[in-house]
Length: 317
Image (tube, rainbow, N blue to C red; front, side, top):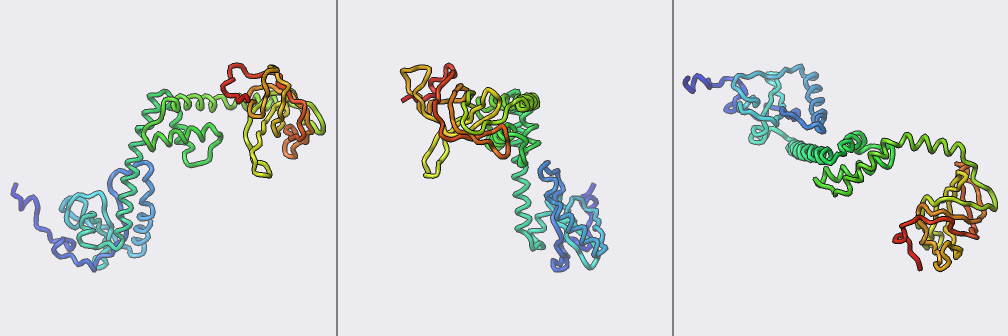
């Protein structure tokens, strides 16, 4: 077949040789290829503008028989601009090269930004696929489901938040430590068993006594220790203790020399989670939760039982 037969001479009004740029009005951009999952709505605004423009003019999309997607040069293009030709009341799909060369678009910055967004989205999609595979190979594939369900939104629990933080780091940097992958397994197990723990906690709470009011003695397990700044900007050490009767109290950790080991002096910094303690103080009950209390003037503090094998966490002086 001769070249002249394969590519007949164009006679349509939109061939490059007869183009009058002033006759074409830029309307919107579009992408004719496949978009990543996170970018499916990136052209929604351009589509809206195009549809509204068509409704005002009643114009239709032009047709051509010279191949390609660009209705001007006939080349194949994925990035295109849509233009309105008032004289023929038609809309043309124009490849991005013709858009730039003919300087038909007055919104080149927007076009460039859309290309950058798509490139970043594709890179992010590859990173996500890689991260998902890493999690699957490590046996913690369910972490991806947690990340996909709660990424960028509110987290139903601190475990989900930590999972999302670790997976987000994996997506961004492409790698996380072996310890972090192992910790993801622990977090997933906590999420799985949370209903059981909450049910057990509710049952214990129902049986718990209200926090005491006035002078009383508490005997229970330390749930948490931390530092807090006082009114004079000085650090003070506080703890949260769960009494054997079920209620929880909070306040400054008292000093004590009455220790199971009389050769050691127990400073405020020596207590750790899990230690059993006994002390007397003046208590007040929380207005929001009757099973939670505060105290002041603690005294007669002593250790009932210390967590074994945790001496490296203690700071004996």
